[in-house]
Length: 311
Image 1 (spheres, rainbow, N blue to C red):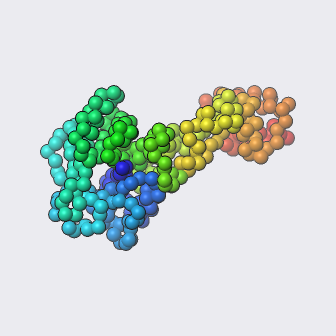
Image 2: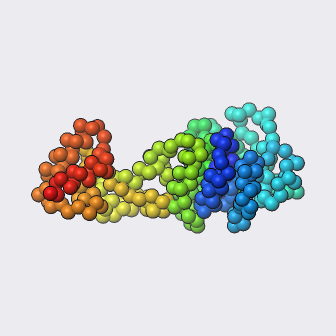
Image 3: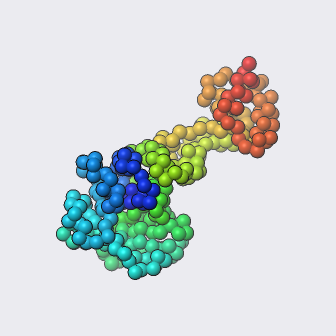
C-alpha cells in the first residue's frame, strides 16, 4: 500500500481551496492506494462535497483522539499528537479506525538507515507480523530508496509525497521503481503527474529542476549525436520507460556535441528538408554558436539555423 501525503504537507503554504481540490483530483488519478489529508486542508475542501473519490482510501491526520468523531467517513485517522520523541529519533504513529481500533502503525524516521543495513532492520520489523507503514525522513536523501526496499521486501505500506515535499520519499519515484522491478502494474494515470507537478509548483512558488527524476521536463532531452541515433532507432536501449507514460515527450536539444544524426532528426521534427551536402557547413556553424554561448541553443535559434541552411 502506498499512501500519498502531499496534501498534508501543504499546510504552511496557504493554498486556496480550489487549488487544493485540483491537486487532490490529480493525485486521485495516480496509482496510489490512499491519500492523507490534514484537518486544515480538509476544512478547505469540505465546501466541495463530495470531495473524495469513493474508489480510494483517505486518512485524516489528527492531533487528538476526540477529533475522530468530528470527522466521520475516513478510512483511518493518523494520531500524531505532540510527541516528546526527539526529531532525530524514530516515532510510531498509530492509524485508528473510527472506533479506536488500530489499522496499522506508521513508523516515521530511519534517517540514518542506508545501504545494506536497512535490510536487516526491515527483516526484524517484518518478523513481528504486524502491519507497519514505513515513512522514512529524507534527511540524507535516502527516503525513496528505503521505501522501495521496504515494499520489495514485503512491507505492508509506505508513505510518500510528490517530489518528496514534507521530507518524505517521492511518490512518483517509488511508483516507477516498483514498476520497473515488475512489482506493480501502474493501474492509474501516471500522465497526471505533469499537471500535478504544475499545481504543486503554483502552490509552493517553487520550480522543480528540469532534471528531477520522473517529473523533470528535461529528463527525456537528448543531445549527443550517438545517443540521438540510438534513441531514434531503438528508444528502449536508452530509456527505462517511454516518456508518454509520465506525461512527457522525448525532445532533441542541439548543442556543441550534436552531429549529423541529431541535426537530421531535428530537421524532421521541425518539418524542414535538408540535403546531405548542407550538413557539414551547418554542423560547423552550430558548434561555433553553441561553444560561443557556452550552452545549448534555443529551439528558435536551431530552427533559424536549419531554415538558413535549407535555403
